[in-house]
Image (cartoon, rainbow, N blue to C red):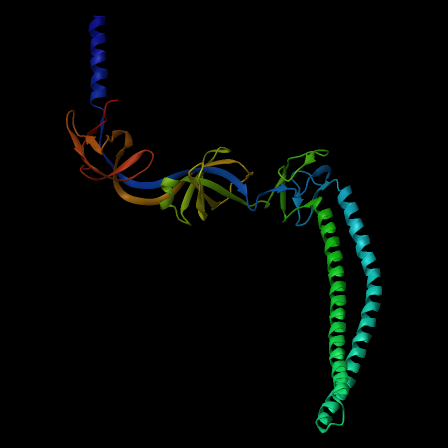
Length: 360
């Protein structure tokens, strides 16, 4: 008797598996693209130093509000301070030397004026002798002396003017050079005082006092306060479907069983060659009550929604876009949109027909 019951039970299970069937459903179908990413603060950035040195002091604490230009970290800058002082002394000495150079310039300007006056006299004498030379009033030798004096005055004036110009250029060059060296020293010294690039909130401090800092070591993370965005990565195969302002349904591990709406507002037009993905940014339509940078996020980007679509479960679709319409017959169908559960049937199946689930 038990053997008969066991055989009957096997037959029932076999029949159940064999005739697992369903009818298509009619309803709304949404096509979407999957993306994953993280929550970030707007304008979130990592603070780095532009110079190397020992971290003497941390002037901020995690969580506090930060203003633009606020001092964050102080590096040891004894050498830079000495260089600045040296540049300052050089600049001050050059300023004192300027008085001497100014006197030389005044002296040279007077010399130029004398040369100009002498040229006027010699030119006048040359012009007069040139006019009377045709009357043989002056000998050729005397005229050549007058002409030579005139040309010598021209050359003397040109030389004096050139010397004056060089003296002024030297003065300007020395002043500019020493001023630039002082500014470089001051700028280098300021580089050891690390300040915030804009106002926001300090999310994290990544170093401790006494640590050796280089330009490659991240120091802190700062971002806009109470303003967040979603940074997502989309596979290259789906990017042709992605547009700005498309709706996104977002889920967060921090908010179980909740879905939040967002919209795409930026698409980065370059692919990451390593991950073969594109980066996009979106903003929540309505922010969750609490958010923190670097929370993980998953999203479905809504591509299109179709109403009154004929759909079947995805696991009823065979390879080659076919369906099982009875125990032995398969039929080719034309498919349309699909999501992670359903696929749309455009042609080849009536809404009242049964289809059979393929055997595993």
